Length: 604
Image (cartoon, rainbow, N blue to C red; front, side, top):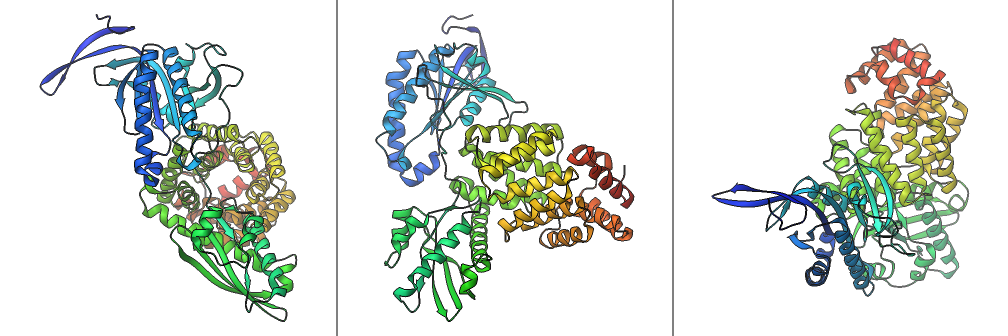
């Protein structure tokens, strides 16, 4: 026995090479301090970032640790492992570090601020002169990863040793699933006690959408009487691009200042902080309009896409606006293609968060098993960088739903819990976020089968953003499951009208096919599903819709061939498995669809 540290129970010799190291086992409080986005900070200003970090380390060693009886067990390069005898000491030290960090950052611009996140766990660990080892050390590190910038997250065991309002302001985060941990862990976010606790939804630590500026188009030849049309074109394209959930569009009021000016991409970056710039010229001859477009990536100062489109002037100014929709879709697709290429070709630490997110979404919807696995890796990297941001959490939940729908899930219950956990975190960060509400409804539809909750959440999603095409699409599918075919068709048609040239149009077509099946318009269902298959032949939901529609039309041989292709993609599919995961199981549609699939060749 030894009394050197409070709570120590035993000393044991461990053979290390040719030497024997004396390691103590005892109950200790472990505080992990981690720098948020250290790779980005060092890439931008290596000397400045490292100087800031070394000043933090020095201040903690000289001021914080002596005051609260802790020790620096390990320096992690962009983090620290601190060892304390009890939880209260570790918590007070964390608050001191938090206050110092806020004071230092107050004088810096946001892009240069060095933000810290911290995790505290308490338990039996192994301690020697150089380090601390054990399961709870790993837990503290995972809790730090769960924290947002400037936040402190503690384990349930640590929280039990704190008195709320006296020791800390405490917020229950619920059961949290964390990387490399098979079971969920109860976690709590804490802030300093007092009337102005620091617990609040943290701002996003990463920019998760690429930004685009659209400057007014220039008339050729130049004429003051035509300036208004260039403004109108830019405004309508901005309006169309704003409907995309994958782009952050800079307002027309900001970009109009560049009308008629000579400007460089450096100017655009400096004044608007945009990642992409869409500009162009136009020519009118009578009622005809010719538009020359150029999309440039601001950072590399290179043109990444060009096109020339023509239309009638009345068509641009009218209600249909086919040219405007075509421009918006082509621009969005060009950006998506470039970001996906970058995401797959660049090492993760060097990739912007929005590049990872766009690449993950694109790969997720390819429905190739290998691409699907890769999309999870990219999504996880975004979640690790911005654990409190609602967008990556929402898409991660969507990933788990798609895995179940595609028949790739090895544990339906676990995937359901993981998906629900992601949407809970997304809604905690942004309770009124349209995407988070829509994906939460999707999870309730397919995982918990609480279709009543899903219906309410979809209603909230489209109320929060009436232009959210994905919300209308998924809402329509819920109606299809509940044998409400007419409403299902109306909602999916509205979704397609809001995003007629969506990069993932095959997904819209698949769900529209399901709506037509529910409405018993089987010819239209087959037409829509075949359009989806031309874009993506790997989506099993599409094949199920075709097979059901073919069987109901009496095209039995065609239905059997479709089911044979379905079984090739999902060899383990059975009717029982289908009903177990399908939200339609308790409705007439579920009975009709499962009977059709059974007769077409899906085994019981």
